[in-house]
Image (cartoon, rainbow, N blue to C red; front, side, top):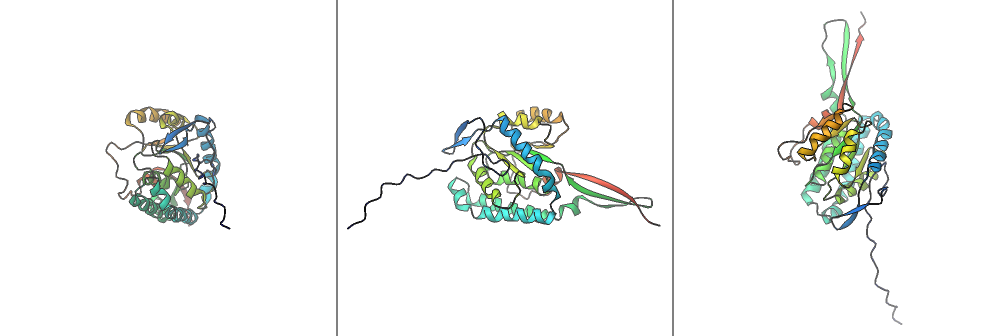
Length: 278
């Protein structure tokens, strides 16, 4: 007898969520918006506070990890992202951008155990002292991710912050958030400790003012901010003396060699004097 015909199967559609503290919660407000043909969480002020708390809790442990380990984890993120190439291109990310994002992770992974030699060292002094400068992470860095390059631009602002021991709360591209959420899924499976990177979808105009003003955020990267909005957010950040990276006046070529500038922006120099034995 012929086998009974199975009824048409209804496919299970993927639910896109925030990435906070290594988990994938819905927005506490229950709000969503339409982007790239999907319902995407519209992050609220409460979601932002939760993300900052997760980043703060993760920061001491991540900063205390060896530079070698941080480099290995960033390299693992590149490996996992390479395996998601098909999914990312299906979301509209150009194949070349996926390759560049993978290479960018590897590039920063290579810097993990080298940036201390570039940013620190022994200083010449006139006296019987040893004077040594070493870089230390700033803490929690808030990021307004650039628009128009939803994967490479996001990696290019997250990786330089975390490679030096900082943790990140990033507001991703509002118009193209799905590659960012997919990036969060790769980070969740790449040995990155929960809370080191937190990704919030939604409208930066709603959440960025609270990110800029949050007293437990130590730095603010306004790479994707509108110039008019950036002025107000920078003023809010000044209230607790945050370090701020202003948006570039000219369009940024995210495919170009980034150099160490963004890494150095989120490192502070600690100088120690020690007497020499006679």
